[in-house]
Figure 1 (cartoon, one colour):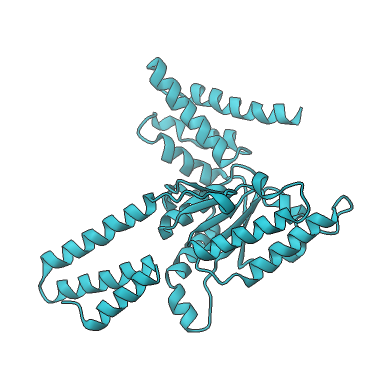
Figure 2 (figure 1 turned 90 degrees about the vertical axis):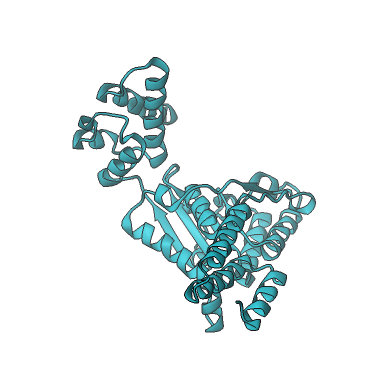
Length: 320
C-alpha cells in the first residue's frame, strides 16, 4: 500500500502537471506492491501508467488565437527509426536521458540539455530527430510555422516570438523552429535590415532567459549563414551528414529485409546510393516496394537501381 508521503507526492505532481514525475512515483508504488507479494495490484498499476502514457502521446492540443503560428504534429518516430552515426545517436540518447533526470539535475544546480541546434543537408534526419525526442519523452511535437511568425509589419514578429516563448513556458513540449535561418541569419550581413536584427536579438534574449521544462530545437540546412552568437546559446549542436555505406546498409535492411533476395544487400548497391540523403534512400526503397505490390513483380536489383536513379535525377533537375 502506498505511503502517505507517496500519496502526497502523487497529488503534488498532479497539481503541478508533471506527468513524467507522476508516472515515476506510480511505478515506484507498483514496485513496492510487487515486492510485498501483491502481484495483481502491481500489474494493474503498471498497466494504468503505460496506457495513460500512450493516451498522453496521442493527445492533440489545438492552438488558436495568439498561438496560431504553432502547429502540433504527430510524434510517432522511434529511436530505432533514426539511422545516424554512432556519435549522433549517442548524443540524442544523452538528451533523452538528461531530460528524464531533469529533476535530479535541477536539485543539484544543473539543467538538462533542452536547447538543441540541428544542422545539415535536407533529408538527413533533423525533423525526424524532433519527432523521436517528442515520442521518447512523451511530449507533444509543436512546430513553429515561420511563415506565420515572420511578418512584414515592424515589431509584430517580435511580439509573436514572445508569444511563442510564452507557450513554451506554459505548455510543456518539444518545440521545433524549422528553417531557422529565416530568423537566425548573421546580423552583420550587408543585406540585413534593422527589423531582422531586432528579431534575432529578441530570440537570443528569450532563449537565454528560458527556464521551462520544454525542449527547444532549431533546425537549419544553412548553418554557415547563422549568426555566430546563436551557437553558444544552445546546449548542443548536432551536425547531420549524408549517410555512409554502413548507414545505407542499415536503411536498406530496415526497409527491405524479408522482401527482397539477399543479393540486393551488397556493397555495390550501397556504393550506388552514396551521395543520397536518408530520405532519398527511404523513398527509393518504398517506391520499389510499391511497384512490386502494384505489378506483382519481385524487387530485383535492376528495379531498385531504377528507383535510385529516379531520386538522383531530381538533384540534376535542381542543379539545372
